[in-house]
Length: 144
Image (cartoon, rainbow, N blue to C red; front, side, top):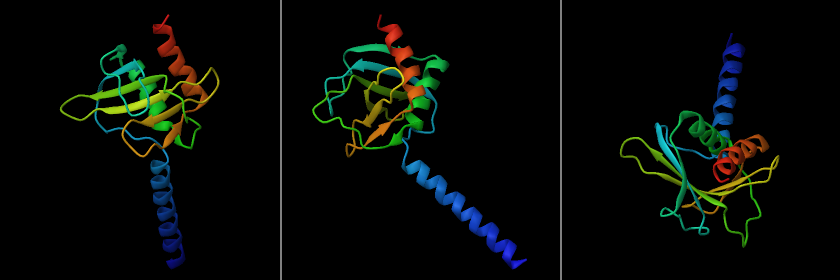
């Protein structure tokens, strides 16, 4: 019986540690309802372009696509030296919560995109190819 309890305890600890490592390697947003997501052409790293918003999404489907792309992006160093982000993404929550400002280097079709918090240590996160395709469809279809 002690062996069974020890194995269960060990399995539980491994699961908890695995979940924490996953969370440390992905981007996070607040656990609050997203009111709207604004997209603007970027002025460069560290500078959020709030004055020239080109799209605002407040429909559930678009918000879900963008939120999923952000939350599933994995921490990985990307070569962004000397390149300006394509877009700035501002996630606005309902209530009096602070916004999240994120830079986006939008990948080509079937490639990964790069995300980076505007405020932070410059760590980059890569989306999946599927997320890039969904983001391209959302952003570029409105841009035409």
